[in-house]
Length: 355
Image (tube, rainbow, N blue to C red; front, side, top):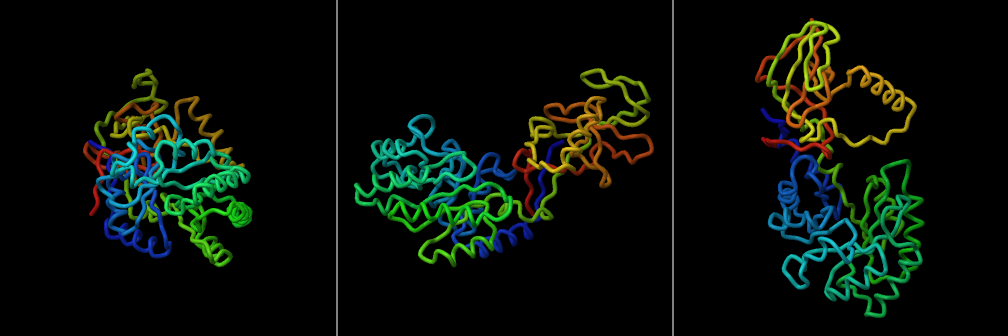
């Protein structure tokens, strides 16, 4: 009666080892729901891979990974002089393991005033325009650090958070590297995201004096989707005739069929998926089509029976969902599994089974 992620353990572990070998300096990312696996499990797997640094999304996530991974903990959300970042006591064992991300000059000054021994990376703004220092600010940060002797041991590098692939990132990274070199920082490490293996190889050749460290979540943990299967459980089966009323909202069955109640609802993230960001004409047409279906109560669900995705009978509930199966189609029995296509970054599971 649960939403379950089942993992072919040997295949998944083989993928993790292969990925780590092909990406020297790898920094695994464990954030949010842990890509469906949970933060603690990913922290243990990062330790198993033998990496020296694990990245988390926020300061609130440190507690879930610190006891399962012994290395450095890079926080991707920039440090600010407020919020959960201030819960870290300067000089504590955990604080000494943390590597902060700094994206404003004033925050660098405030961080060092609060904790003179803090370790950090300087984030250079990219075309994402989310967080980061401008070229001028990066030089200002470099001058501030130079006045303190460079702080080579505390400055762990420069971070570049690039957008998802929209063609090659090499041109942008080369422009940003010009700013990194001009800042005259006491570091030759650059932390990067969303670069292909080929792009990383070209950068390593173009900048032999620098070390590029890839921060990776999706490609690492979810890179071999064939090793992963998500299943729901059939909880109830109700044959209906055309016009028969069902559900919270008193909808009418559009034709004879079966209302199937299955485990998995909004509490798991079902029906709450993040938009894909695909702006193609085909994608927009599909979105319009789904909107039309929604208007008459037909919305394609992520639940699949015999390889065919079935429609929601009504919007998913918190713990379960109601599907409509037309007459003549195969109807599974109570207790049978139903395959579910989900986005792992937005779905939480009741159980994760790794063979």
